[in-house]
Image 1 (spheres, protein in one colour):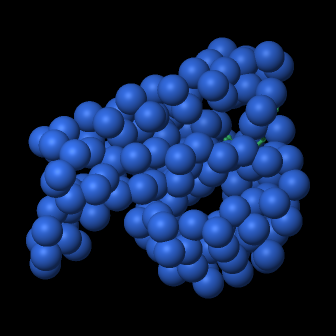
Image 2: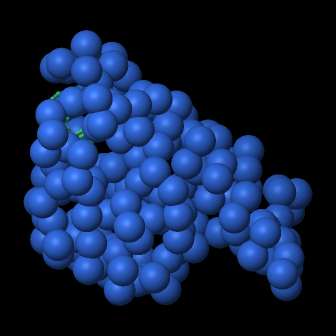
Amino acid sequence: MKTPSRSGNPAATPAPHIAVIHGPNLNLLGTREPNIYGSSTLEEINRRLIELGRELGIAVSPFQSNHEGEIVDFIHSIRDTHAGIVINPAGLTHTSVALRDALAAVALPIVEVHLSNTHAREEFRRRSYVSPIALGVISGLGPAGYEFALKALAARLEQTASE
Ligand code: CA2
């Protein structure tokens, strides 16, 4: 199989797409609770991920919603166009069977990211409906966690493309 192109040649294999999904309230990043979630805004995080994606030969599609159904619809919509998902499901991590079912249904490789260490906080944050169907989980490393997740998915795609 062909590997993703990093040549910048438009005639070469198109870059695989990876969605970066941010759940409810993450639009507030950088404006409230910097002691827990840091001072980067969502826009800054997305900009950095798009830039990193370019370096990795990946087209990054960021998406944020405060509405569970919109996130489910978005996941359905990328089923045939995207090769993987980085997701911070935010509060839906701990509550949403619908989100988990949508992710399982599209059967794309997923990396779950949390800015804070969910295991060092309240007990209810320790349960994730997403983790059992994720390739991996990164928690507590701040915005760098999204970058590690993107690199891990890019490496996985390279690996599966060469198999
Ligand atoms: O640590 C994370 O990334 C979380 O996914 C964030 C969620 C929380 O429910 C999870 O347990 C862990 C909360 C997102 C709220 O985002 C805010 C950002 C700025 C100000 C207030 C809330």
